[in-house]
Image (cartoon, rainbow, N blue to C red; front, side, top):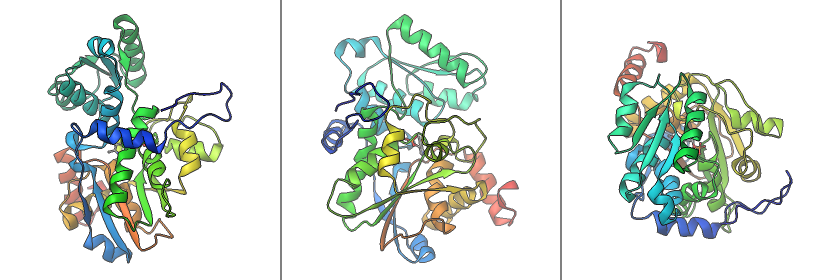
Length: 342
Ligand SMILES: *Cc1c(COP(=O)(O)O)cnc(C)c1O
C-alpha cells in the first residue's frame, strides 16, 4: 500500500496494487463473506449472452461495503482501536462500519442528521454503534463528525476514497476471476468509485482483456460528470431509487477519480424507470431482493445500454437493503403496468 503522492496534481504513485488486494482478501476473510456467483437464465436470454450475478446483496450487512470497512479497520493500531472510529453515513457504509466495529470490539460513532428516518438510526444502533444525530442535513452532520474526531481522537473511516477501502472492495474482482475465468465484461455500480476501482484493478491485472463498465443513476451522477469535466466536480444531490449511489466524490478526491479515469472502459446511465424495472426483474426472475443501487447493472443490461459485452458477463449486484414498503410499491406498480409512479 503506497498512498504516497508527489505533491503535484499530476503523477502520483499507484494508490493500490494487486498485492494489496490479495492481502486484503486474507485479512477480511474472517469478517466478510465470499459471496455466490449465480448464472441468470432469464437475463442471459434477454441479453443473448451468458450473464452471471455476483451477489453482494447476500453479503453480511446487505452490501459489499463491509469488505472495504473491514480492510481499513484491521489496519488500525491497538491505540487507534481503543480510541475508536467515526464516519458519516445513514446507509450501507454506516452499517458496515458499525458491524465491523462490533466484531472487532472497536467503539464506533456514526453521525447523521436529525432528519434521518428512525428505522435507519435503529438499524445502525442495533449493531452496537453510537449514533450521534446533529443538524438538518448531511453537511452539518459531517461538520459535527470532524469536531468529534478532533475532540475524541477518533479515526475517520472513509466510504470510498481510501486505498485500504479500495483494496477491500477489489477482493470481489479476485473472486470473479476464480469463479468465472472466461469473463469478458464486468458491469459494476458506480458512485464514489471505490467499488469499481478495486474491481477494475484486479480484473485488469491478468493476461486477458476484460472490459469494465460503470453504471450510475442519471440523477446527479457526479463521477460521470467529473470524468467529462476532467476533474472532480460537485452537483446538487437529487432523490433517486438508487439512494446508495447518491452523493459526491469529494472535490479533493485523491484516489478514485484517477483510478476510474484510468481503469474503467465505459460509463452508462440508467433512468428511475429502468432502475425500478431492474429491481422487479431481479425479484420476479431470479428471486433476489436487490436495492436500487444494486440493480443498476441489471437495469443497464435489460435496456440495452451496454455494448460489446462479449460472451461472458458478470454483473455486480452490490446491495440488497431496500425497504419492504418500497419493494411492495414497485411490484404493485409493475403488475398494474403503471411503472414506478403507482
Ligand atoms: C456504496 C454503494 C455503491 C457504490 O460504491 P462506490 O464505491 O461509492 O462507487 C453501489 N451499490 C451499493 C449498494 C452501495 O452501497
